[in-house]
Image 1 (tube, helix red, strand yellow):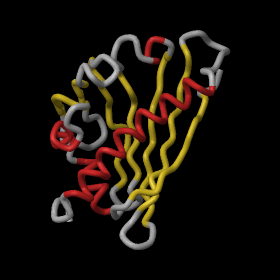
Image 2 (cartoon, rainbow, N blue to C red):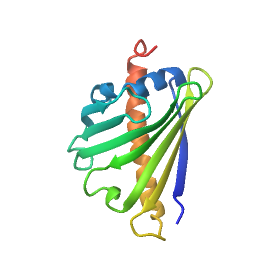
Image 3 (tube, rainbow, N blue to C red):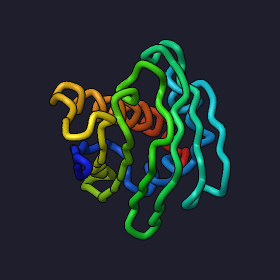
Length: 161
């Protein structure tokens, strides 16, 4: 079965350039997403092949390790693609054979931008798909983190300027 694609987009109150700079600064995530991400380990230079490991806070759905590998990082188009290698135990990852993400930032008006997010997934149980509620949970998790990042940038307008 071909991978299933789910997608959504959100407008955030910061420029695409500032969000992109912070998005690529993975070591800053424990500070930016305090209470959600406790620690980060980066193996690589941030480009394709880099492995990012994030230790999630136990208050964030029980905690655990979330590990990704960078597949593509297009600075001109503001597109970032990653392959998810590991998700916290008990999360939807138990049902997934594989999944990958693509994030694209597009400039908006008045210093805002649109974040377009796509997830491709395959289930361990071939031939089935996740329920709409579980698909929404995946997207909500990523957009929840985006909301924290946006709040940090709004509260700290000089950072990543």
